[in-house]
Length: 147
Image (cartoon, rainbow, N blue to C red; front, side):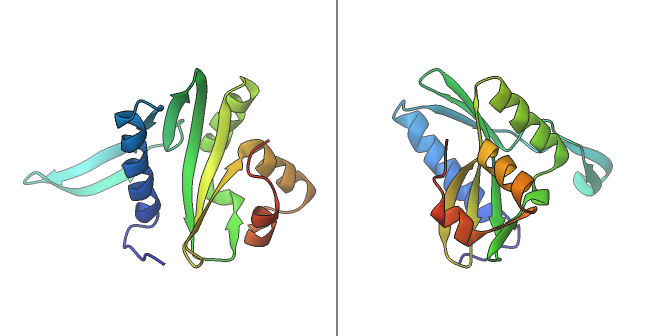
C-alpha cells in the first residue's frame, strides 16, 4: 500500500512514468489531461481559493496503432469500486468514445492489495445494469478486463 496525501496520486505517478516510457520507445502516445481549475482568489502569487470546473475529458487520452483510447485512473482502499467515483461527464465521454469505436476503459488501483486492473467501460456498464453500482474486487479478478 502506498498512502499519499493526494488520493490517486500514486496511480497517476505510475501511469505518467509508464506513459513517458511508451513515448520514449515510440510505442504509443498517451497524454495526461490537466484538471480545469477556476481561480477565485490569488494573494501574493499564492492561490488561496479555487474550484474545480467540469472537464469533459477523462484523465488520459491517447492513440496506439491508429486506435484512439481514453481512460480514467481510479484508486480505492476498499474491497470494491464505486462506479459513482466516475463523474457523470466522464461517463458520458467514455460512452461516446466507445460508441465511436475507440477504446474506453478505467485503470483501477486497489491500494489495500497493491494491484492494478484495466476494465473496459462496456464491461462496467454491463455489470452496473445487471447488479449494482458497487463492483467487488472479486468480480474484477474473475472477469477478462477488455472485450
